[in-house]
Image (cartoon, rainbow, N blue to C red):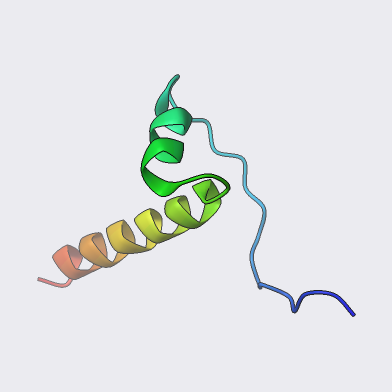
Length: 53
């Protein structure tokens, strides 16, 4: 029995040189994907809110 599905779609994202290391320094070891998901969700909500004004 394995982990339950996360319902995510793999996606390749190209980041500027050094950004991955900056994310790791802030988010912690092995937390890069979670950090990026949360940052994208936050920005999507911000921009959707701005569009609805």
